[in-house]
Length: 355
Image (tube, helix red, strand yellow):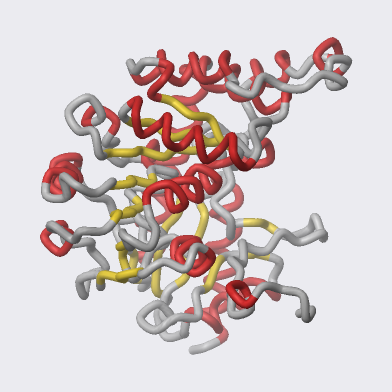
């Protein structure tokens, strides 16, 4: 730390993303990336002719991909804002709808970026405990007088609230914005997007990283009442109006419009997840029911950290969270069928060695 860093930021604990090893030999099941390549339409969109246009600035309104998202969800274009990944959309929500007069509330176990944003913005943050079964209790979010941020399905648990339960939270906080982070909703969750027309205090954030197979392109979006989206755009354009590259806009539009490929990939991941979860339970794991592209599981007879290290030494990366209440568990991304078979083989070796 230099002596020039402003005192507001001297105690920051930055977010640490999942490991991205330079060694290509690892089987990566630690960052919830898709095991499938982008839609063939994406490859067609990123043509040599388009590369020749990289001397030009991108459209600051990202009109083409924004229109594709609006059409997908039956919204007006002014109800959609495109962002550099869903993380940027979430950051703009923390900036726009929280502050000295309104703090923020989120689950005590959820996406690790929420407390980072809260500290970065010097917010009064209320972390609401989960139930003993890791579930979010909607009743705990009634009339909080704070901006509410909820990941649904939640991370790292994979558990999901119904749309009715989300609506209960939105309805009981009429004077606060409720942000629903739906990064994983396409793998079995129930989206809150149909509620947007009924509530002027709801923002839904989604990403193209998971179900659209575009983690490397960094593309997300926020959906909500036109006035809320105008607020977010004011923050975005005060920070970086050119937040999306030309390739990102082209790739995003192509991916959004290829509904058949989207369904094929998400259906395959769901089938693999269910088969893998059943296989884990057969060998003694405790596995939470997941509506995401990962599972949250506790191995038998071995702590989460030791299991994580044992797999890593065998060339398989998963995610371990060194936090109270989570240390017995690991989060495992759903990869290809072959990758999940390999993980199960390595797991059998590890458990046999500990007998």
